[in-house]
Length: 364
Image 1 (spheres, rainbow, N blue to C red):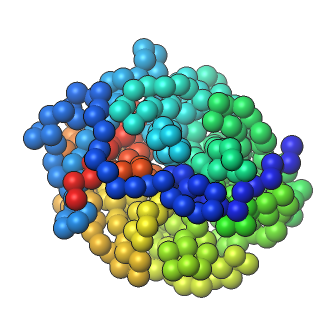
Image 2 (cartoon, rainbow, N blue to C red):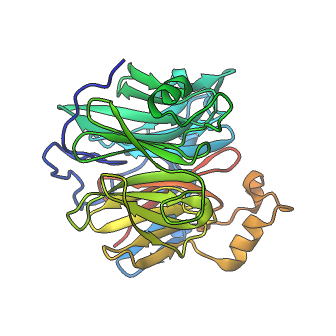
């Protein structure tokens, strides 16, 4: 099925109205159902200056109904126009997406089409308004599955699997690596599909769903990727660009809307994904920290950063991702995705056994 007509305005994790007017307004954080949220004195503070946050681990997990769990990882996060928060999970159940309201109340399960063997295989999730209606774009965490577009109520609009990519791109053979990771959007209504765990390409489509080009491919040179895990539209300077987390190359890369490489930026550890609010770029780093960058791509602060802690996390003998009893308050294990909500709070999902969602409640 061909994609529907798309609105010109785009967003990644949080919602923008048609015409580009953001609903992200500064305001007081709402009350929460999760008990630890009320005991603020027990929660550590991370960040510096104007970017300080109360660190609330396992946000709303206690509100999951019986039989619902994140499984082997909480993977992706997105926020819609109503402030509902969507989390994808790997090997959890039921479905592949859990939805909560802003207070932490569980709302519903979505994404049954990304379930294999009774377990969810959710990965990337992004939400965009198109002609007055919001749609959810998903990438599955399994080589047998691909991308999907659905309504907020869960109705499937289209799916794009390996067979279709072979036909459209001409880049894949029967045994080519293929395992998709994320989706992002262009300002003209088109979209980008990242085969981050597979071919190391990001595929570009126009607003009608017509294949345009593939960006990247495997390598270390500028314009090439080693795990283009997450990507997003960067318009902070008024010029639209695709920015890609080139994870295993430990850098971000920027491209114009025709796929031309513009610049690369190092200094990262294992950057996993991107969100932008105003002039601030948010980059969760799988190696135990979350980074905020200013409009000039200079580091504002690393949230939860601790060299000694990171050494423990990355010690394979420790197996930190599966040993919850070793986790420390105010420290991350493996941040896999992160996004801002409407009040400027940050939600972080981690690639850890049992999954973990952390709310960073904005203090300043």
